[in-house]
Amino acid sequence: MTTLEKEVSPHFDDFLFDWSTKFQFLVGGYGSGKSYHIALKIILKLLSEKRTALVVREVYDTHRDSTYSLLEELVIDLGLEGRVKCMTSPMQIRFPNGSKIIFKGMDKPAKLKSINNISLVWLEECSEIKYAGFKELLGRLRHPTLKLHMILSTNPVGEDNWSFKHFFKDEMNNRLVLDDAELYKKRTVIVNDTYYHHSTADDNFFLPESYVAQLDELKDYDPDLYRIARKGHFGVNGEKVLPQFEVQPHDEVMDTIRRTINPLKRVGMDFGFEDSYNAVVRLAIDQEKKILYIYWEYYKNKMTDDKTAEDLKEFRETRELIRADSAEPKTIEFFKQNGFNIRGAKKFQGSRLQYTKKVKRFKKIVCSDRCTNTIYELKPLTYKKNKRDEIIPDEFNIDPHTFSAIWYALDDYEVSDAKSLINRYKHLTGRG
Image (tube, rainbow, N blue to C red):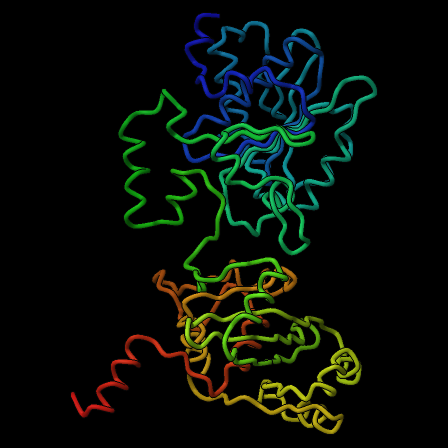
């Protein structure tokens, strides 16, 4: 018992014996000790109760050098190798009371169907498993008498991963379970039937200082990996295209626009059908403060032009000018013939980059929380990178249709910045 106490980090004390919830979600940085303590927790549980535990990774063969190896090492450290049998073909760990741990991979889903009476599941690196796989495993978690538990562990990845959307926030569907910032502050939180636990290398007293120093060095040359590995925080992977983008309640956005002196109103439209989307946005520009407001959106695909025209019939009545993708002259002509005030925006060699730079010049981009598709596309939007890990300034991680609509809406509008103001001053005064 003394040995066991020495090998437990204090931050994991409560976690080891807390079985009050069905789900336990552990997220943390590299070397935080989460996998070690999960393995220990499972061994202690199976020694005290007869259970069958299922340990799952996306690829079955990765168990051998990770979860299986860790559990086997713990069995030896605890002096249990005479009572607990670690078998390698197939990988399985058997306990004297009839408990057992079996290992499966989501790359061999057929082998999951023969499993019965699973009361405890551990999803290691759950962010690598598909959401469909997670739901499949929920169906496998069943036992006639024992309380059911699922432990999920991961290093934090992008906020677009299913694990973040399911257990924290899904802005697209306006769903909030827990703000991850609250977890980083409190370190452990229980919400509904889920126990959340956050850890970093600082919580693992057994790490060498040299390892922690290596993690600290990431801050200078790889901020994304530093956020994940050292801080253990979810976030957006890559360099954001619009770091000044923020979301505000719709009523607040509209009140601000109403108080703005002579706001410039614009409408932009991007065309799409099968995989792309018809995206329309209404914008308001505070020209003095250089703030762009996005307060209305339309976003649908697989719509013929006549159906889209019917959906957008209010624009026939308001006579708002719609600036649209000039690459679709036939579609523009159709809308004109149906009473819309519409024209093609200028497109030219390098226009993607110029339009992107134009949007980036706004000091703030404020989006109504009702524009869910705009938020979904633009808030996490990042640049693509080339083989040398350099950003490509006019290519992105997704095809953002609302961004294209904003481009077209801003056709022939220029956002003045410090450089353009200086050049204008030089021109007016004749000073070079």
